[in-house]
Length: 329
Image (cartoon, rainbow, N blue to C red; front, top):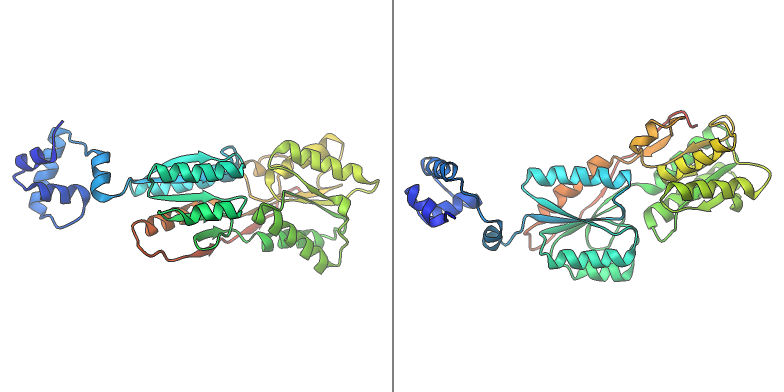
């Protein structure tokens, strides 16, 4: 294997000059740069990433922790993150928690042991153990989706978006509105979206029937089951249903259609997330678009900006959102 010393000899340059060229870390004259480039091309020299890491004290690897690999939101965020990082010469290590808080902690420890340059966390359940683990990190961390004290975050306006969607139903003269959420341990999706719904109902002067408030998981089957619970709770049925994810909404739609309900004639329904499938199911699903690709891009740019800095500037970015009205309302 050819070495930097041999490259320097062939290019009639010093080893330190070749090192500066390879690491883009100092001045190299244009004439010398061309000679080094010519030798590298002719010899097929490829720098050792391990040696380069020792010199620069960077691995050019970013850890990305996701709650579930299978969701549309996760895939869109990860693709966007990876596109930006790849442009800057970074690779990613992807870690899946499968919505398990203990795996979230374990993955943080694993990535720390792998000496990644930074971590992007698609956060779900924020707890004291997780916060303590984050405080022990020696590399920058950016969180997506949840607010965590002391670190930079990219957030959705979950509260206001849920409030606006509920008010859309009110503007369409719906009074009997049901809600399907998730565990409030998930502050953004579970707590803030539910609070937005409840506050909107209060401002509209509408009664929230406890029998029409259900909790689901993040999968189709639990959306189906939650809708079944609501529909069977009392003889009267709601005329509108708001679900905190598109997946839950689609599961609920399946139950309604299977049992002879017309959407939106009998029951209007809306989800959250603007998943790819939401546009193509029938009827097409009304939903909230949270600009996932833009959020991923901003998270990647923010983590790159923080790498190598002794003092980190803490940033809080709230993403724009829009309601996409389709045939389900």
